[in-house]
Amino acid sequence: MAGYQRTHDEDRLAKIGRYLEYGFPLSTGAGLDPQMHTELVNPGWLPTSILVNILGPNEVRSRKGKERTVATDDIVTISSDGIHHELTFSASNVDPTQALPPLEIVDGQHRLLATDLISLPDDYEVPVVIFDNLPLTWQAYLFWVINVEPKRINTSLAFDLYPELRDQEWLKRGESIKIYQEHRSQELVEVLWRNPSSPWKDRIELFGKRVDGHVSNAAAIRSLMATFVRTWAKGNDADADPEDITKLGGLFGSIDKNGTRYIIRWRRPEQAAFLILCWNAVRDAAASSKATWKRLLGEHGGKSGNDLAAYAFEGPYTLLATDQGFRAISFAYNALAQLVYDRIGLLEIEGSEEESEPADEFVAKALEQLESNRSLTTFVREVATALIDGVDWRTSAAPGIGEEDKVVQGQYRGSSGYKALNKAALTAASISKDINVRDAATHALAILGWSNE
Image 1 (cartoon, helix red, strand yellow):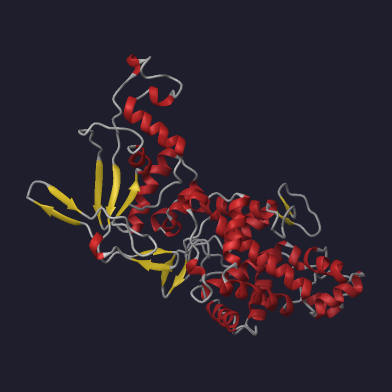
Image 2 (cartoon, helix red, strand yellow):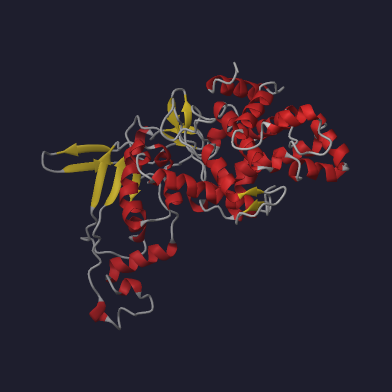
């Protein structure tokens, strides 16, 4: 059986198994010997049902970018004598890389697995509610109302386990989706700040200080919320940002797939790894670029070689190290990648349930996985090259900057500078030598109505 469930918690399984065997309170006191405290033994009744969904022959699930169905021999059949219903299905082991198991556990995985830890009487009854071809959206709904609302489990974990929750109208009408988006963005910003592979390590100011070459925590969170961690805004929906992205979604939220909303099934480690992959490419491009803006920055700043590489990427006079620059890079990668997602291997990304937390070790493993995808790494690198070579990243206060350039660069300051720099980034990408980058940028400019401005 398969399903979207929390990582198997061995302590939780043992506790449930102990409860089934001895009831409460012995289930909470592992140090108490049931043989010595027989007066505390109580029934281990399960008060709530295990929720199971039957997958029909035409049901499809995406696994690592490929569409899977249940093998013909494993299809569940349902018969009835008018009073009772009987399920019949094969007990063969299913290879998940080739086909789908015929049953999905919507809720109750730990209760089900705990029964394997103990010897239950043959007449022990487990309450089960069975659904026939319950859509994933309704499974997500049930998971939310059962686990998140009453128990308040980690909201971010819920959105990883059921990615469909990222784009549910019933959820978007309340505050939960916005709280999730802010929380997810904050988690990802924290990874960028602390992860040893991140170019932003120790360069995000968590407590509001202003430091040259650093961005503020609040600005980084807002940038991710406005770009990667968005639902797809077809037209101008309630959460659309009127300044820049009114018709583009977020790679970590939902995107447009041929006129319908689509969720890429990656989790926090893969999402954080993608951000690190993109920013590493930008840093490398800035280091190797021979763009005029970089040369002038070095000449007037007295920098060369490795010093100039760092100066151009994180110095006091580069927009790449400002709130506007952080937003522009995030905006460009989010917009471009979602428009060619099927060409660059994004559908192959699927995180592990056991490694959903954004711990550094899991992010490192995810980064290694992404770096092994040649289509993706080529695209990320070509986007970085187009942005670094095609945009003047000097601030208006850069040493030696001419009056005319100062006026041009001045448009990127303040709140209005976000849209101006976003547009400059897409325009630069639209003349990339890479066809995927060029096609995506041209499409994005048209979607946003910027191609004719």
